[in-house]
Image 1 (cartoon, one colour):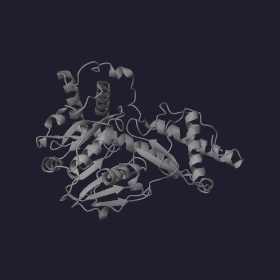
Image 2 (cartoon, one colour; image 1 turned 30 degrees about the horizontal axis):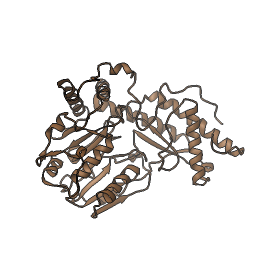
Image 3 (cartoon, helix red, strand yellow; image 1 turned 120 degrees about the vertical axis):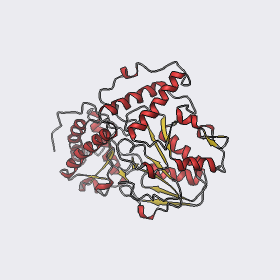
Image 4 (cartoon, one colour; image 1 turned 120 degrees about the horizontal axis):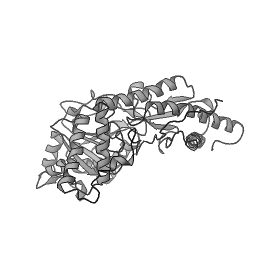
Length: 393
């Protein structure tokens, strides 16, 4: 059994949301926040417009696409798109992890659309992207946060599509290159790659999505928070920083700080490089560690932000489902008890294992320092079970 490591991560926050703050962050970053001021004041509107413009530059969003700050994080942004845009065509919905499956449920059970094809795959795999029909509206997550599986590129998306592409990219924006010309709707939240605070989402609409909004009236009522048109035309004010609801000006200040930090490390390319470097450290460790494997079945589909791991040691795989779940919880619990890694358990509906957030705000040295603790914790839990003390810590 390996000895208990001596070195701990300097910052042991590996949660997949809210994610680690940018390196060096303190509450001093919020000193200039417009607390107690209206978000509709000239200063408040300027701050919100700054978030939009800095985001456009950072994530290389073309001028043809509108950007809005919307309520309820990435979830709110996706729901706005689904409720406002669907119903004009049949739908192809891709699902290979829990969030994609959740959108399928909303489309079928809440919107009650009937012309829906669901292209599914088990955790660790992607559906056959070659079977997607782009004559229909297509909904998919770019990066499956709960499975660690991401689409490799946008080559599979038809340039001459007739339907819309609606992409939940919350853990991909800022870490993976997106083909904006092939994406009609893109959503993300501040709390992921930027390490911002929760409850605020970003919604990007391309020209084709705007045309759909102005030509299609959904057959269901739209809540006020979802309404993006006024008198049949796009409400441009929403995309200039005039938010539908009241945002937190503390959170606005925080994401501006995060965007400035991202600019200081080289913008989008710098963010992507840091995430890829973190993944590379884990790839080398997995290659040298027989007890652990990636949940993603193919290397080219591996996420560089939400890295999902499974235990493949014969002792672990020989346990029943409940035993594997208990053992994986025990490993994560021991690491957390040592202050070496917080919030690294697998998502509740995913196969038992670990999930590590390795986006750009996480330092590579901290990732490297965490890995020996996984070795130690797994060996400790296995040894305890062998001596009859059970899997739980």
